[in-house]
Image 1: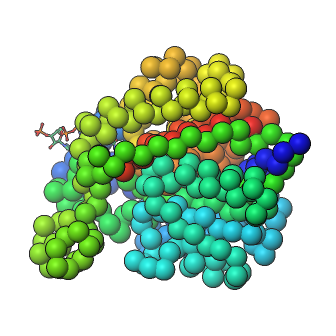
Image 2 (image 1 turned 90 degrees about the vertical axis):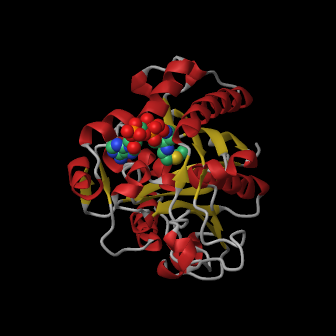
Length: 330
Ligand code: ACO
């Protein structure tokens, strides 16, 4: 029987301090009702001083423990983030050092809100090829240090939280990951992006002028993102299930990226998926970009919603635009 790859350990971590929408009302001329009605978010966790690899470390240690594995048994680290510790080297290298290991490859990927699905696809291919056996895949973000928390930034800043989720994958002969489908369309790259720092900005990657214009803050065409997210996630879910040999009815649990509760409710409505089969965490954590799916997976395990043997379909959509879906036997 051919090799498959399977998630054998899941962990997550959010910083202890949470901020309700009422806390945000004090900072940025917003309201609890506006945020809940538009996004479903009620609170989010923001760091005091931790960095992205700190959050990732905590999630990774929990995932390793759940997998009954030590860090020195890992063959590779894949780290999805758009809020790295530093410009370079990648945050995977900092995480590797904090895990007390060396030598194994440590790769950073971006892929924004689709980072975890892209990382899952990479891990799956490395494992199925026989090149690596045990891979740590992490999605982690510290957004709070990069948000404009004045009224100017309210349209974006109320949506994002900090957090990390990690999974350990291993080679197995059982059923694990059936299929992962990936897409991107760079025609929409500037519809959801953070322009600075960047080499396309003129003579300098970063300057006082760039900072004065706020180009280091994320920018989003919210309405366009909404329409595309619903369409693309619905399409790719159906396609990846078809390629896996399953139908929507076969799926026990749907884990979607947590950009916006209204997006996920709309995808469920379009595909006629019963509400109780979609596991959402955005109410509590906001949008943690690359961390949302593994964070949700861990919460679903902890609350007894996700159990071994279940058929799980995941889908995400984000900046790029990028989108993807994966079907796994948990
Ligand atoms: N609090 C109060 N009022 C606000 C806020 C806020 N935080 N932000 C904007 N407003 C105001 C605007 O100023 C505007 O006021 P006006 O009518 O007086 O001019 C009004 O609310 C409507 O503003 P819009 O920008 O048109 O807001 P919209 O109704 O489109 O909702 C939202 C914004 C929630 C982002 C919506 O576009 C959406 O759901 N988009 C989906 C994309 C998404 O959720 N992205 C998340 C991250 S991306 C990802 O993960 C894929």
